[in-house]
Length: 474
Image 1 (tube, rainbow, N blue to C red):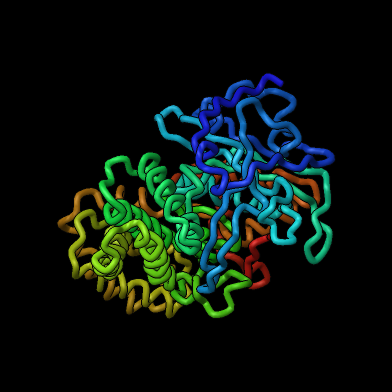
Image 2 (cartoon, rainbow, N blue to C red):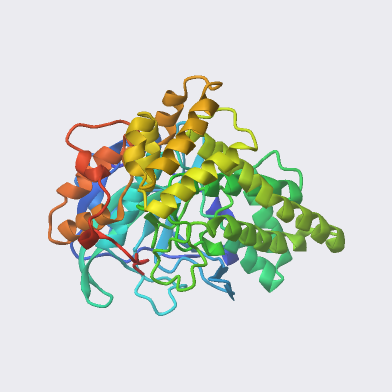
Protein backbone atom coordinates (compact mmCIF):
# COMPACT_ATOMS: atom_id res chain seq x y z
CA UNK A 1 0.00 0.00 0.00
CA UNK A 2 1.54 3.31 -1.11
CA UNK A 3 -0.92 5.66 0.61
CA UNK A 4 0.83 7.84 3.18
CA UNK A 5 -1.03 9.58 6.00
CA UNK A 6 1.28 11.78 8.12
CA UNK A 7 -0.23 10.93 11.50
CA UNK A 8 0.79 12.99 14.52
CA UNK A 9 -1.47 11.71 17.28
CA UNK A 10 -2.07 13.47 20.59
CA UNK A 11 -5.46 12.34 21.94
CA UNK A 12 -4.18 8.78 22.17
CA UNK A 13 -1.58 10.00 24.69
CA UNK A 14 -4.30 10.97 27.17
CA UNK A 15 -5.12 8.43 29.89
CA UNK A 16 -6.86 5.23 28.81
CA UNK A 17 -10.05 6.31 30.59
CA UNK A 18 -10.64 8.84 27.82
CA UNK A 19 -11.13 6.14 25.17
CA UNK A 20 -10.94 2.48 24.31
CA UNK A 21 -8.40 1.30 21.79
CA UNK A 22 -10.29 -0.55 19.10
CA UNK A 23 -9.51 -1.76 15.59
CA UNK A 24 -12.15 -1.30 12.88
CA UNK A 25 -14.15 -4.36 11.88
CA UNK A 26 -13.44 -5.40 8.27
CA UNK A 27 -16.19 -5.44 5.65
CA UNK A 28 -16.68 -7.99 2.92
CA UNK A 29 -16.32 -6.07 -0.35
CA UNK A 30 -15.27 -2.42 -0.04
CA UNK A 31 -15.66 -0.19 -3.07
CA UNK A 32 -14.90 3.51 -3.24
CA UNK A 33 -17.77 5.92 -3.87
CA UNK A 34 -15.82 9.14 -3.42
CA UNK A 35 -12.45 10.41 -2.29
CA UNK A 36 -11.88 14.09 -1.60
CA UNK A 37 -8.59 14.71 -3.39
CA UNK A 38 -8.41 18.42 -2.53
CA UNK A 39 -8.93 17.75 1.18
CA UNK A 40 -6.43 14.90 1.11
CA UNK A 41 -3.83 17.22 -0.39
CA UNK A 42 -4.51 19.80 2.33
CA UNK A 43 -4.00 17.09 4.96
CA UNK A 44 -0.70 16.00 3.42
CA UNK A 45 -2.08 12.61 2.39
CA UNK A 46 -0.19 11.33 -0.61
CA UNK A 47 -0.35 8.28 -2.84
CA UNK A 48 -4.12 8.70 -3.13
CA UNK A 49 -4.17 6.87 -6.46
CA UNK A 50 -3.42 3.63 -4.64
CA UNK A 51 -5.83 0.84 -5.54
CA UNK A 52 -6.23 0.02 -1.85
CA UNK A 53 -8.01 3.28 -0.95
CA UNK A 54 -11.33 1.50 -0.54
CA UNK A 55 -9.89 -1.09 1.82
CA UNK A 56 -8.24 1.52 3.99
CA UNK A 57 -11.27 3.81 4.28
CA UNK A 58 -13.58 0.88 4.93
CA UNK A 59 -11.44 -0.17 7.88
CA UNK A 60 -10.06 -3.33 6.27
CA UNK A 61 -6.51 -2.01 6.48
CA UNK A 62 -5.15 0.24 9.23
CA UNK A 63 -2.58 2.69 7.85
CA UNK A 64 0.86 3.03 9.37
CA UNK A 65 0.87 5.50 12.25
CA UNK A 66 -2.84 5.19 13.00
CA UNK A 67 -3.94 4.48 16.56
CA UNK A 68 -7.65 3.70 16.24
CA UNK A 69 -9.74 4.38 19.30
CA UNK A 70 -13.34 4.99 20.36
CA UNK A 71 -13.75 8.17 22.41
CA UNK A 72 -15.74 8.32 25.63
CA UNK A 73 -18.33 11.04 26.28
CA UNK A 74 -21.72 11.55 27.88
CA UNK A 75 -24.51 13.90 26.83
CA UNK A 76 -27.95 15.35 27.18
CA UNK A 77 -30.14 13.80 24.50
CA UNK A 78 -33.37 15.76 24.02
CA UNK A 79 -32.86 17.16 27.51
CA UNK A 80 -32.27 13.83 29.29
CA UNK A 81 -28.79 13.09 30.58
CA UNK A 82 -27.14 9.87 29.49
CA UNK A 83 -24.06 9.35 31.68
CA UNK A 84 -22.19 7.27 29.10
CA UNK A 85 -22.40 7.46 25.34
CA UNK A 86 -19.14 7.37 23.41
CA UNK A 87 -18.29 6.41 19.85
CA UNK A 88 -20.66 3.55 19.19
CA UNK A 89 -19.97 3.29 15.47
CA UNK A 90 -16.97 5.55 14.92
CA UNK A 91 -13.23 5.28 15.44
CA UNK A 92 -10.64 8.03 15.56
CA UNK A 93 -7.83 6.77 13.32
CA UNK A 94 -5.50 9.55 14.39
CA UNK A 95 -4.55 13.14 13.73
CA UNK A 96 -2.60 15.07 11.13
CA UNK A 97 -1.23 18.61 10.96
CA UNK A 98 -2.65 20.20 7.82
CA UNK A 99 -0.92 22.70 5.54
CA UNK A 100 -2.14 25.64 7.62
CA UNK A 101 -0.63 24.13 10.77
CA UNK A 102 -3.98 23.05 12.22
CA UNK A 103 -4.30 19.71 13.98
CA UNK A 104 -7.20 17.69 12.55
CA UNK A 105 -8.82 14.37 13.42
CA UNK A 106 -9.43 11.64 10.85
CA UNK A 107 -12.34 9.43 11.89
CA UNK A 108 -14.11 6.43 10.41
CA UNK A 109 -17.89 6.41 10.89
CA UNK A 110 -19.73 3.11 10.45
CA UNK A 111 -16.60 1.06 11.08
CA UNK A 112 -18.13 -1.56 13.36
CA UNK A 113 -19.11 -2.10 17.01
CA UNK A 114 -17.21 -0.66 19.96
CA UNK A 115 -17.68 -1.06 23.73
CA UNK A 116 -19.93 2.02 23.49
CA UNK A 117 -22.29 0.60 20.83
CA UNK A 118 -25.10 -0.09 23.32
CA UNK A 119 -26.34 -3.19 21.46
CA UNK A 120 -25.98 -1.45 18.10
CA UNK A 121 -24.19 -2.96 15.14
CA UNK A 122 -21.71 -0.09 14.80
CA UNK A 123 -22.52 0.27 11.14
CA UNK A 124 -23.99 2.93 8.86
CA UNK A 125 -26.03 2.52 5.75
CA UNK A 126 -25.31 4.23 2.46
CA UNK A 127 -28.01 6.94 2.64
CA UNK A 128 -26.80 8.79 5.77
CA UNK A 129 -23.17 8.40 4.69
CA UNK A 130 -23.82 10.11 1.37
CA UNK A 131 -26.04 12.74 3.02
CA UNK A 132 -23.28 13.66 5.45
CA UNK A 133 -20.71 13.72 2.67
CA UNK A 134 -22.81 16.05 0.50
CA UNK A 135 -24.11 18.32 3.26
CA UNK A 136 -20.85 18.71 5.16
CA UNK A 137 -18.94 19.58 1.98
CA UNK A 138 -21.73 21.97 0.96
CA UNK A 139 -21.54 23.64 4.36
CA UNK A 140 -17.80 24.06 3.92
CA UNK A 141 -18.35 25.70 0.54
CA UNK A 142 -20.95 27.99 2.14
CA UNK A 143 -18.31 29.13 4.61
CA UNK A 144 -19.74 27.38 7.66
CA UNK A 145 -17.32 25.85 10.22
CA UNK A 146 -17.87 22.13 9.78
CA UNK A 147 -16.42 18.67 9.78
CA UNK A 148 -15.35 17.61 6.29
CA UNK A 149 -15.81 14.45 4.26
CA UNK A 150 -12.66 12.70 3.09
CA UNK A 151 -14.06 9.43 1.70
CA UNK A 152 -17.19 7.34 1.30
CA UNK A 153 -16.97 3.59 0.76
CA UNK A 154 -19.60 0.94 0.13
CA UNK A 155 -19.02 -1.98 2.44
CA UNK A 156 -20.56 -4.73 0.34
CA UNK A 157 -22.56 -5.80 3.41
CA UNK A 158 -26.21 -5.31 4.25
CA UNK A 159 -27.16 -3.21 7.27
CA UNK A 160 -30.40 -4.11 8.98
CA UNK A 161 -32.64 -1.20 9.96
CA UNK A 162 -36.36 -1.47 9.21
CA UNK A 163 -35.15 -3.49 6.23
CA UNK A 164 -31.84 -4.60 4.73
CA UNK A 165 -29.91 -1.63 3.33
CA UNK A 166 -26.51 -1.29 1.65
CA UNK A 167 -23.77 -0.56 4.18
CA UNK A 168 -21.15 2.17 3.91
CA UNK A 169 -18.36 3.87 5.84
CA UNK A 170 -17.68 7.61 5.95
CA UNK A 171 -14.28 9.11 6.69
CA UNK A 172 -14.63 12.56 8.19
CA UNK A 173 -12.16 15.20 9.26
CA UNK A 174 -12.61 17.55 12.23
CA UNK A 175 -10.67 20.16 14.15
CA UNK A 176 -11.33 17.73 17.00
CA UNK A 177 -14.13 15.56 18.36
CA UNK A 178 -14.06 17.16 21.82
CA UNK A 179 -17.69 17.72 22.75
CA UNK A 180 -19.62 19.30 25.58
CA UNK A 181 -20.43 15.70 26.46
CA UNK A 182 -16.72 14.90 26.80
CA UNK A 183 -16.53 17.37 29.69
CA UNK A 184 -19.83 16.14 31.08
CA UNK A 185 -18.74 12.53 31.44
CA UNK A 186 -15.84 13.32 33.76
CA UNK A 187 -17.70 16.02 35.66
CA UNK A 188 -20.69 13.75 36.29
CA UNK A 189 -18.37 11.05 37.63
CA UNK A 190 -16.43 13.42 39.83
CA UNK A 191 -13.22 12.51 38.00
CA UNK A 192 -11.58 15.86 38.56
CA UNK A 193 -8.06 14.87 37.49
CA UNK A 194 -9.40 13.62 34.18
CA UNK A 195 -11.51 16.77 33.80
CA UNK A 196 -8.44 18.90 34.42
CA UNK A 197 -6.43 16.96 31.84
CA UNK A 198 -9.26 17.37 29.31
CA UNK A 199 -9.42 21.10 29.99
CA UNK A 200 -5.66 21.48 29.56
CA UNK A 201 -5.68 19.41 26.38
CA UNK A 202 -8.56 21.45 24.94
CA UNK A 203 -6.85 24.75 25.73
CA UNK A 204 -3.60 23.59 24.16
CA UNK A 205 -5.38 22.35 21.05
CA UNK A 206 -8.00 25.05 20.45
CA UNK A 207 -7.38 28.09 22.64
CA UNK A 208 -3.76 28.32 23.81
CA UNK A 209 -4.32 31.93 24.85
CA UNK A 210 -7.13 31.01 27.27
CA UNK A 211 -6.14 31.84 30.82
CA UNK A 212 -8.72 29.90 32.85
CA UNK A 213 -11.98 27.91 32.42
CA UNK A 214 -14.03 31.13 32.25
CA UNK A 215 -11.85 32.40 29.42
CA UNK A 216 -12.13 29.10 27.55
CA UNK A 217 -15.88 29.13 28.06
CA UNK A 218 -16.19 32.66 26.69
CA UNK A 219 -14.34 31.63 23.53
CA UNK A 220 -16.50 28.53 23.04
CA UNK A 221 -19.66 30.59 23.57
CA UNK A 222 -18.54 33.09 20.94
CA UNK A 223 -17.88 30.34 18.42
CA UNK A 224 -21.20 28.63 19.04
CA UNK A 225 -23.17 31.89 18.91
CA UNK A 226 -21.62 32.71 15.54
CA UNK A 227 -22.17 29.18 14.27
CA UNK A 228 -25.87 28.98 15.10
CA UNK A 229 -26.53 32.46 13.70
CA UNK A 230 -24.84 31.34 10.48
CA UNK A 231 -26.96 28.17 10.35
CA UNK A 232 -30.09 30.25 10.68
CA UNK A 233 -28.97 32.70 7.99
CA UNK A 234 -28.84 29.77 5.58
CA UNK A 235 -32.09 28.12 6.67
CA UNK A 236 -30.18 25.15 8.08
CA UNK A 237 -31.65 22.95 10.81
CA UNK A 238 -29.24 20.63 12.60
CA UNK A 239 -32.02 18.44 13.95
CA UNK A 240 -30.26 16.84 16.90
CA UNK A 241 -28.44 19.47 18.98
CA UNK A 242 -27.68 17.14 21.88
CA UNK A 243 -24.70 18.14 24.00
CA UNK A 244 -22.74 15.20 22.57
CA UNK A 245 -23.20 16.82 19.13
CA UNK A 246 -21.84 20.19 20.26
CA UNK A 247 -18.10 20.70 19.81
CA UNK A 248 -15.67 22.91 21.69
CA UNK A 249 -14.09 23.82 18.33
CA UNK A 250 -17.30 25.44 17.09
CA UNK A 251 -17.65 23.16 14.08
CA UNK A 252 -20.92 21.68 12.85
CA UNK A 253 -20.80 17.96 13.57
CA UNK A 254 -22.98 14.86 13.15
CA UNK A 255 -25.21 15.46 10.14
CA UNK A 256 -28.00 13.08 11.05
CA UNK A 257 -31.57 14.32 10.53
CA UNK A 258 -30.32 17.69 9.28
CA UNK A 259 -32.17 19.66 6.61
CA UNK A 260 -32.43 23.02 4.87
CA UNK A 261 -35.76 24.81 4.84
CA UNK A 262 -37.56 25.36 1.57
CA UNK A 263 -40.55 27.55 2.50
CA UNK A 264 -39.68 29.83 5.39
CA UNK A 265 -41.42 28.93 8.64
CA UNK A 266 -39.69 29.57 11.98
CA UNK A 267 -41.24 26.50 13.64
CA UNK A 268 -39.96 24.11 10.96
CA UNK A 269 -38.91 20.69 12.27
CA UNK A 270 -37.67 17.84 10.08
CA UNK A 271 -36.09 15.36 12.47
CA UNK A 272 -38.31 12.30 12.88
CA UNK A 273 -37.22 11.92 16.50
CA UNK A 274 -37.82 15.57 17.46
CA UNK A 275 -41.47 15.10 18.38
CA UNK A 276 -41.82 18.35 20.32
CA UNK A 277 -39.73 20.68 18.17
CA UNK A 278 -36.91 21.03 20.68
CA UNK A 279 -34.40 21.43 17.86
CA UNK A 280 -36.57 23.23 15.30
CA UNK A 281 -35.27 26.09 13.18
CA UNK A 282 -36.02 29.03 15.51
CA UNK A 283 -35.39 26.99 18.67
CA UNK A 284 -31.72 26.54 17.81
CA UNK A 285 -30.81 29.95 19.26
CA UNK A 286 -32.26 28.97 22.64
CA UNK A 287 -30.90 25.44 22.64
CA UNK A 288 -27.31 26.50 22.08
CA UNK A 289 -27.58 28.66 25.22
CA UNK A 290 -28.92 25.63 27.11
CA UNK A 291 -26.05 23.51 25.80
CA UNK A 292 -23.50 26.09 26.89
CA UNK A 293 -25.06 26.13 30.34
CA UNK A 294 -24.35 22.39 30.54
CA UNK A 295 -20.72 23.01 29.60
CA UNK A 296 -20.49 25.69 32.29
CA UNK A 297 -21.91 23.24 34.83
CA UNK A 298 -19.21 20.74 33.93
CA UNK A 299 -16.44 23.34 34.16
CA UNK A 300 -17.45 24.44 37.67
CA UNK A 301 -15.66 21.39 39.07
CA UNK A 302 -12.34 22.87 37.98
CA UNK A 303 -12.73 26.00 40.08
CA UNK A 304 -11.47 26.38 43.67
CA UNK A 305 -14.26 28.79 44.66
CA UNK A 306 -17.30 27.12 43.19
CA UNK A 307 -19.84 29.66 44.43
CA UNK A 308 -17.94 32.46 42.70
CA UNK A 309 -17.51 30.30 39.61
CA UNK A 310 -21.24 29.59 39.40
CA UNK A 311 -22.01 33.30 39.66
CA UNK A 312 -19.57 34.19 36.90
CA UNK A 313 -20.60 31.34 34.58
CA UNK A 314 -24.24 32.35 35.10
CA UNK A 315 -23.43 35.88 34.01
CA UNK A 316 -21.63 34.55 30.93
CA UNK A 317 -24.54 32.28 29.99
CA UNK A 318 -27.08 35.08 30.47
CA UNK A 319 -25.05 37.29 28.12
CA UNK A 320 -25.19 34.75 25.31
CA UNK A 321 -28.64 35.57 23.85
CA UNK A 322 -27.53 39.14 23.15
CA UNK A 323 -24.41 37.78 21.48
CA UNK A 324 -26.52 35.51 19.27
CA UNK A 325 -28.84 38.38 18.37
CA UNK A 326 -25.87 40.51 17.36
CA UNK A 327 -24.50 37.69 15.17
CA UNK A 328 -27.97 37.10 13.71
CA UNK A 329 -28.33 40.79 12.87
CA UNK A 330 -24.94 40.90 11.17
CA UNK A 331 -25.68 37.79 9.08
CA UNK A 332 -29.19 38.75 8.04
CA UNK A 333 -28.32 42.38 7.40
CA UNK A 334 -25.61 41.22 4.98
CA UNK A 335 -28.24 39.13 3.19
CA UNK A 336 -30.07 42.42 2.54
CA UNK A 337 -26.89 44.14 1.38
CA UNK A 338 -26.33 46.04 4.63
CA UNK A 339 -22.66 46.00 5.58
CA UNK A 340 -22.98 48.24 8.63
CA UNK A 341 -26.09 47.07 10.48
CA UNK A 342 -27.85 49.21 13.06
CA UNK A 343 -30.27 47.99 15.74
CA UNK A 344 -33.26 49.30 13.77
CA UNK A 345 -32.35 46.99 10.87
CA UNK A 346 -33.72 44.11 12.93
CA UNK A 347 -37.25 45.36 12.21
CA UNK A 348 -36.54 45.54 8.46
CA UNK A 349 -35.32 41.93 8.50
CA UNK A 350 -38.20 40.72 10.66
CA UNK A 351 -40.78 42.36 8.40
CA UNK A 352 -39.39 40.62 5.33
CA UNK A 353 -39.35 37.27 7.15
CA UNK A 354 -42.98 37.88 8.16
CA UNK A 355 -43.96 38.45 4.52
CA UNK A 356 -42.08 35.30 3.54
CA UNK A 357 -43.73 33.25 6.28
CA UNK A 358 -47.25 34.38 5.47
CA UNK A 359 -46.80 33.62 1.79
CA UNK A 360 -44.75 30.44 2.09
CA UNK A 361 -41.80 31.99 0.22
CA UNK A 362 -38.76 29.88 -0.50
CA UNK A 363 -36.04 30.97 1.94
CA UNK A 364 -33.01 30.57 -0.31
CA UNK A 365 -34.57 31.80 -3.55
CA UNK A 366 -36.14 34.87 -1.97
CA UNK A 367 -32.91 36.15 -0.48
CA UNK A 368 -30.95 35.41 -3.65
CA UNK A 369 -33.56 37.22 -5.76
CA UNK A 370 -33.00 40.39 -3.74
CA UNK A 371 -29.60 40.78 -5.38
CA UNK A 372 -31.39 41.13 -8.74
CA UNK A 373 -33.51 43.98 -7.43
CA UNK A 374 -37.04 44.39 -6.05
CA UNK A 375 -38.66 43.84 -9.45
CA UNK A 376 -37.31 40.29 -9.52
CA UNK A 377 -37.66 39.57 -5.79
CA UNK A 378 -41.33 40.53 -5.70
CA UNK A 379 -42.14 37.34 -7.62
CA UNK A 380 -41.10 35.40 -4.52
CA UNK A 381 -43.62 37.16 -2.24
CA UNK A 382 -47.36 36.49 -2.32
CA UNK A 383 -48.30 39.86 -0.80
CA UNK A 384 -47.25 42.21 -3.61
CA UNK A 385 -48.46 45.39 -1.91
CA UNK A 386 -46.81 44.43 1.35
CA UNK A 387 -43.56 43.72 -0.44
CA UNK A 388 -43.69 47.01 -2.35
CA UNK A 389 -43.97 48.95 0.89
CA UNK A 390 -41.15 46.92 2.44
CA UNK A 391 -38.93 47.28 -0.66
CA UNK A 392 -39.23 51.08 -0.54
CA UNK A 393 -37.83 51.05 3.00
CA UNK A 394 -35.14 48.59 2.00
CA UNK A 395 -34.00 50.60 -1.02
CA UNK A 396 -33.81 53.75 1.08
CA UNK A 397 -31.66 51.89 3.60
CA UNK A 398 -29.26 50.71 0.89
CA UNK A 399 -28.52 54.25 -0.27
CA UNK A 400 -25.81 54.52 2.40
CA UNK A 401 -24.28 51.08 1.79
CA UNK A 402 -21.24 50.39 -0.42
CA UNK A 403 -21.87 47.85 -3.21
CA UNK A 404 -24.84 46.07 -1.61
CA UNK A 405 -25.41 43.78 -4.61
CA UNK A 406 -21.94 42.28 -4.33
CA UNK A 407 -22.47 41.71 -0.60
CA UNK A 408 -25.81 40.00 -1.21
CA UNK A 409 -24.33 37.72 -3.84
CA UNK A 410 -21.55 36.72 -1.44
CA UNK A 411 -23.97 35.88 1.35
CA UNK A 412 -27.06 34.49 -0.42
CA UNK A 413 -26.36 31.15 -2.12
CA UNK A 414 -27.94 30.05 -5.37
CA UNK A 415 -27.70 26.39 -4.41
CA UNK A 416 -28.22 24.50 -1.16
CA UNK A 417 -28.55 20.73 -0.56
CA UNK A 418 -32.32 20.65 -0.92
CA UNK A 419 -33.94 17.76 0.88
CA UNK A 420 -35.76 16.32 -2.12
CA UNK A 421 -32.55 16.34 -4.18
CA UNK A 422 -30.70 14.58 -1.37
CA UNK A 423 -33.41 11.92 -1.28
CA UNK A 424 -33.27 11.51 -5.07
CA UNK A 425 -29.51 11.14 -4.84
CA UNK A 426 -29.78 8.47 -2.15
CA UNK A 427 -32.43 6.52 -4.07
CA UNK A 428 -30.21 6.55 -7.16
CA UNK A 429 -27.12 5.48 -5.20
CA UNK A 430 -28.95 2.57 -3.57
CA UNK A 431 -29.82 1.45 -7.11
CA UNK A 432 -26.14 1.70 -8.06
CA UNK A 433 -26.19 5.09 -9.81
CA UNK A 434 -23.74 7.53 -8.20
CA UNK A 435 -24.07 10.22 -10.90
CA UNK A 436 -26.56 12.37 -8.92
CA UNK A 437 -24.23 12.22 -5.89
CA UNK A 438 -21.26 13.43 -7.90
CA UNK A 439 -23.34 16.11 -9.64
CA UNK A 440 -24.59 17.50 -6.32
CA UNK A 441 -21.06 17.67 -4.96
CA UNK A 442 -19.81 19.47 -8.05
CA UNK A 443 -22.57 22.10 -8.08
CA UNK A 444 -22.61 22.65 -4.31
CA UNK A 445 -18.87 23.25 -4.32
CA UNK A 446 -19.68 26.67 -5.87
CA UNK A 447 -22.91 27.61 -4.11
CA UNK A 448 -22.77 31.35 -4.81
CA UNK A 449 -22.11 31.06 -8.57
CA UNK A 450 -24.87 30.64 -11.15
CA UNK A 451 -23.95 27.49 -13.05
CA UNK A 452 -25.07 26.30 -16.47
CA UNK A 453 -27.44 23.34 -16.54
CA UNK A 454 -28.05 23.46 -12.76
CA UNK A 455 -31.28 25.46 -12.62
CA UNK A 456 -33.22 22.36 -11.55
CA UNK A 457 -31.22 22.34 -8.30
CA UNK A 458 -32.64 25.76 -7.39
CA UNK A 459 -36.28 24.71 -7.66
CA UNK A 460 -38.31 24.08 -4.49
CA UNK A 461 -39.98 20.68 -4.31
CA UNK A 462 -43.32 19.99 -5.91
CA UNK A 463 -45.97 18.79 -3.44
CA UNK A 464 -45.21 15.18 -4.33
CA UNK A 465 -41.48 15.75 -3.73
CA UNK A 466 -41.67 17.39 -0.32
CA UNK A 467 -39.61 15.81 2.44
CA UNK A 468 -41.44 16.20 5.72
CA UNK A 469 -39.21 14.07 7.95
CA UNK A 470 -35.51 13.28 8.03
CA UNK A 471 -33.85 10.41 9.87
CA UNK A 472 -30.57 10.01 11.71
CA UNK A 473 -29.80 6.66 10.12
CA UNK A 474 -28.45 4.91 13.17
